[in-house]
Amino acid sequence: MKILVLGAGAVGGYFGGRLAQAGADVTFLVRPKRAAMLAKSGLRISSKAGGDMSLTPKCVVAGEVKPDYDIVLFTAKAYDLPSAIDAIAPAMVGGKGNVLPLLNGMSHLGLLDARFGREHVLGGVAYIASTLAPDGEIRHLNDFHRIAFGARHAAQQDLCDAFAAAAAGAKSEIKLADAIEQAMWDKWVLLATLAAMTCLMRAPIGDIASTGSGAALTLALLGECAAVAQAEGFATPDAVRANYSKMLTQKGSPFTASMLRDVESGAQAEGDHILGAMLRRARQYSLATPVLEVAATHLETYAVRRAREAAAKS
Image 1: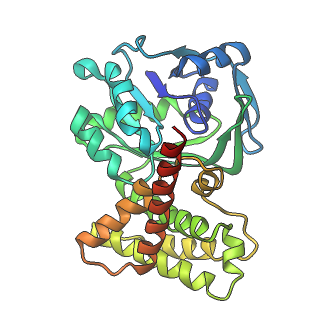
Image 2: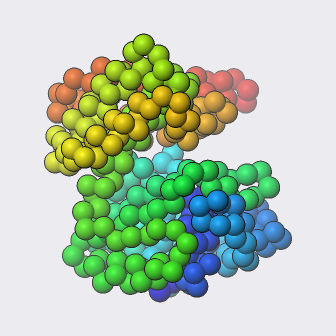
């Protein structure tokens, strides 16, 4: 099985690196600057959970991609979706290639299905906190480093089995899931709540939970997001929701969303893809989601201000 990984950053670089470390045939599609850095210093991962590693990866840049890959591991940011889809398109020519997207939320599936066909788009979700350091090292920040993936079309089952076999020896958990879209919705409910609250309050979960109303607001938002999932036919299981409730209201917890790091550094954020899309679905079902509306508007305002200030500098 031949695997193409879009990018060699915090997510794609981590999981692609673990697959290559295990002996899988992995190639990274990267920009020329990143390709030069990887050629000089290698793909380096720092991780207490999975162990440190370094290897010299196979890389291609735009214009060098050929349609001879079985799976494209797709780890783009939501705001880069159009250009990222164009970048992997040469790997999909002829109908052999298949995309395994690891973005959060669900909106990207419609765009990928429209471009490549549902039968070529798997379902997937990643559970990891990692960052790409200025020196090019990928730093794993927590104990989780897991991918759940699965078929969204009957024709994909053999491919999923083959990918699971290729990933079996990786020093991270890459598992085939029977109900992958349920897993994707479950994570979206969690992430939307986490990102909304930590960005809105500019603080980790533990600080929010230590205030008079923080836990109540967090649980109210969790309920709003879970109501959207239920309306879509993917009700959050009781045990999963109970675990989320405990996780999101734990005093002293340093838990934050990567979106908070983006906002605090003035970077582009995935507010519309994570919160805006959730709010739009809530409105389709006429659901009352007051906390979600405030949080989504907060991120939307951040994006408007950021664009205005950038335009003023140009």
